[in-house]
Length: 136
Ligand code: ZN
Image (cartoon, rainbow, N blue to C red; front, side, top):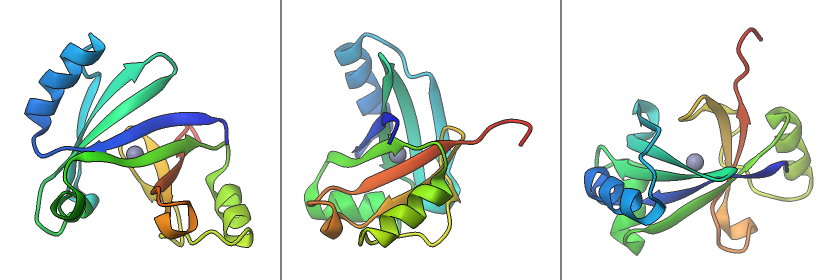
């Protein structure tokens, strides 16, 4: 793993949470992006070398809607950056981690992403992500 790329936080209202995080971090979100396939609206804040990703559900079937119904607002996942997501997925599967995706999918913020089931990662949903490079 290269670094903690971002921490994902499930929120009920991204508008309210944006104001809260702007005040908390003293920086405006640099990006707001909908990920239709996941049923989420996201916004991103830079904090030094890492980021905070706020996630609001856009429909009832969204994993974020289910998370909030069960646990309320709070930390949803931790994302680690990797150089090669396919290699990382193969290695993690071989080590016995349960992957929630069989192939990397397109996530927010120009990333390929895959998730590890919290039951194999001490209760924390883990995302691994790789930047999608232009011209490749
Ligand atoms: Zn994420």
